[in-house]
Image 1 (cartoon, rainbow, N blue to C red):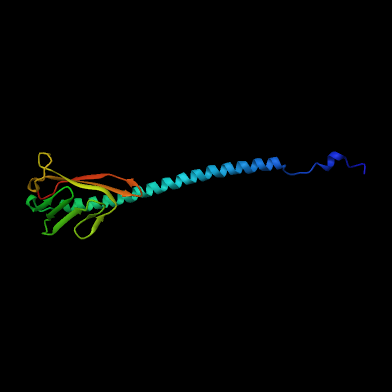
Image 2: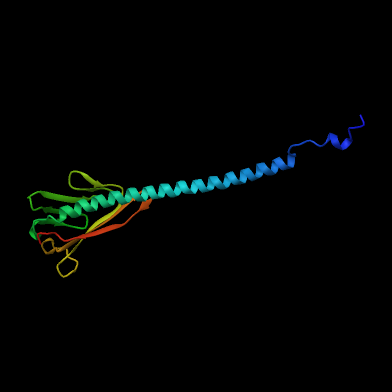
Length: 165
C-alpha cells in the first residue's frame, strides 16, 4: 500500500471535457467553412451551365439563320422585313420565314429555332450603311438575339450580307 500515492490515482491518460469541446467547435467551424465553399462552387457551376445553355441555343439559331439568309435569291426575293419577321425566297426557290412572336419563341414558320428569349430583332441596312425599312434596298441584315436560361442572359449579334446581292 505504500506504493500508491494520491496523485497517482488521477494520472489517467485521455482528453478532458474542455479539450473535447474545443475540438468539436473547431471541427464545426471547418465543416461550416467547407459547406459554404462547396455551396458557392455549386452556384457558380449552375450559373456557368445556364450561361452555356443560353450561348448554345442562341448561337445555333443565329448560325442557321445566317446560313439561310446568305442564300436569299436577290433583293426582290425579300417580301417581308420587319423588326420581328423576315420572309424571303432562297436561291433554290424555297420560301423561308423567320418570326419572333414577341414573347419568347423564334420560329422558321414551322419549327422552333430558339425559345426562352428575352429579345430578338432584325435590323436592315442599305448599301451605304444606313438603316432602311424598304425590303428591296436591303444590303445587310443584322440579327440580335438574347437567350435567357436560369436567369442568365447573353446578347448575341451577327450581320449577314446575302450572296445574291
